[in-house]
Length: 115
Length: 113
Image (tube, rainbow over all chains, first blue to last red; front, side, top):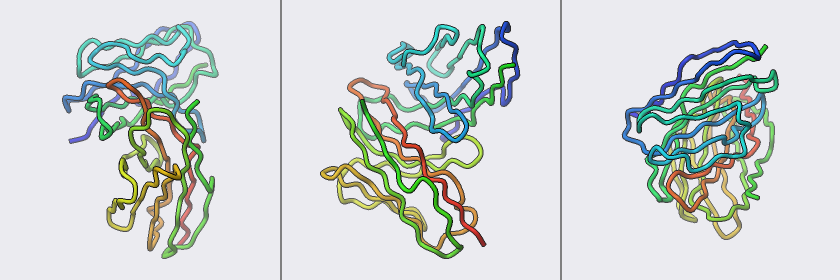
């Protein structure tokens, strides 16, 4: 089973709203990731959590706030977003071993529109 | 800065054709090279390559890595309309657990009946 689930599938929010994206996996993976993907562009890494600790933050604006409550869950809290933040937000997970064979599996994504 | 370049960016073929997609890279702390297929939503994993010269095969798809020349190819034989998708090449790098994936721009493959 290589399933990563994400909710909601679609989200429309205003610039003053606060919302959260959720990601879950039950594969025992210890690394989880958030990516942002704009139309016709490849995914861009935002954050990496390794063993529930934030290990990589790719200079993402503070209006995006990640949280890893436990090894199966990853949240992305959104506040005061801009229209240019509209994108597909992808979650991924991997075993998190310091190994060349560590493979990331992606969830279906949340399509976010900021009005 | 890590860099992954794919070519061609776009390819249109007829069913039954064979296609070769290219990926070259420059990264520090290389771990592996991965190929993903993306249709409408999330990228789905195809192959992971870590060693040079060893071909990975799955049905009509195959891939190989050259770590000396820093490139990989993805071959699809006897293409079908269901192969139409964006094919993403990504390189995994990093020194700590939890790897960093750098993606290429992707190759948009269209297979016409």
